[in-house]
View 1 (tube, helix red, strand yellow):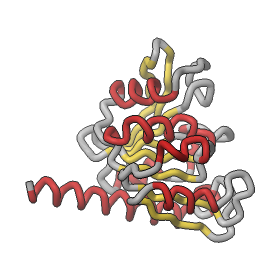
View 2 (cartoon, one colour):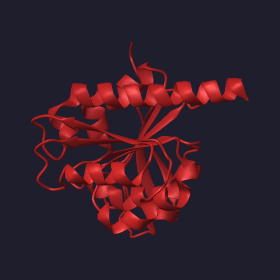
View 3 (cartoon, rainbow, N blue to C red):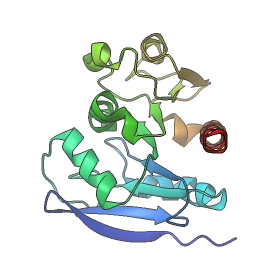
Length: 209
């Protein structure tokens, strides 16, 4: 099955932000951020966008300000993320956030958890910085780490589990900081299981209500 991956731009805070998108706009959405050494293109290269589109999701990968094809500027992270969600018409996406992008995702989770269906932190930076604010937030979380991560210790996954009551973790053996590059198939397997479980839960809630 051929998947069309569109390369497009939107304006956020008056600046050009580039993103890649696959899947139907009406489908449940997954938003990918990226680390400092990567870009939206990474998620196309390792097959994440195509895989999720085939599985019935709308997959969107964004170039953060100053990365990939997006303009350089220094926005307020939560304001940037809120405007991004609105401009892309992303209603309660599952947010995938590796490494550097924790500076964008964690403030959003702290202040606007209700805007998300789920959160997949992939060894994001700045967790200790938000320790107090994260405590007790009930957003479903799948923390994914590489066992050999020397940049953000796997112990920080345990910290998320202590703070957030609906958090679980997956450690990918023999993978480093960008664990999705080394163990791509396993990363996709766990991500899809998490997304499918959240979707089933949301559907059941709608039926029950």
